[in-house]
Length: 59
Image (tube, rainbow, N blue to C red; front, top):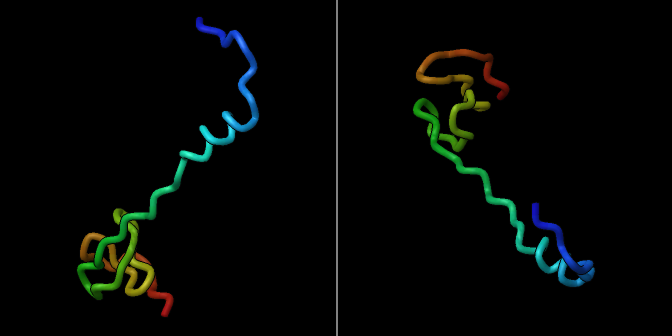
C-alpha cells in the first residue's frame, strides 16, 4: 500500500478539504398540492405519498 513520504502541510491539507461542497437537496412538486417536497418522502403539507393519504397533514 502506498505511504506518503513527507508530511502534508496544513495549508495543502486545508485547501484540498475546501473543495468538498454540499449539494442542495433536489425538490420535486407534490402530485396533489403542488408544493415542493423531497423525492420518495410523504408530502409534509398534504400528507400523501404515491397518490395515497399516508399521514395526517400538519397544517
